[in-house]
Image (cartoon, rainbow, N blue to C red; front, top):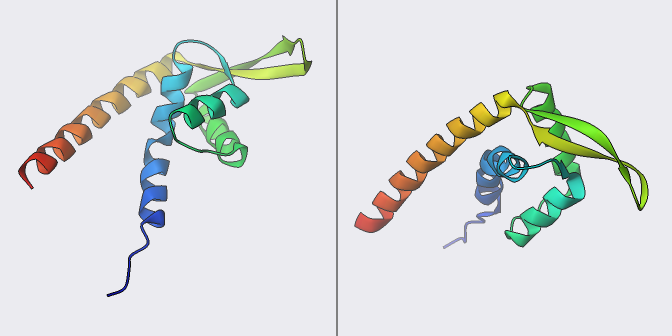
Length: 112
């Protein structure tokens, strides 16, 4: 019997929750990209800059995030992202969706 490679499924699942994860990280305070990557890494979700930057640009274009340049003590100014009011509302919707999915999965796991 041929072994099925789950990498593609895992990648698709992670893509589906990455917006949610980013907004959770940014919801409390402005955050620099390197900090986002480090927080995700600590959570065992490895994401590279080449994935994060387009995602942040898409969220900014959707008006869910904004950014500001802040002077750095260690070099050039850094771009810090912050959640907008629309982003907070969207995050609330994503949280409700996540709760529904989690409840469904937990129910299925408990009976099967």
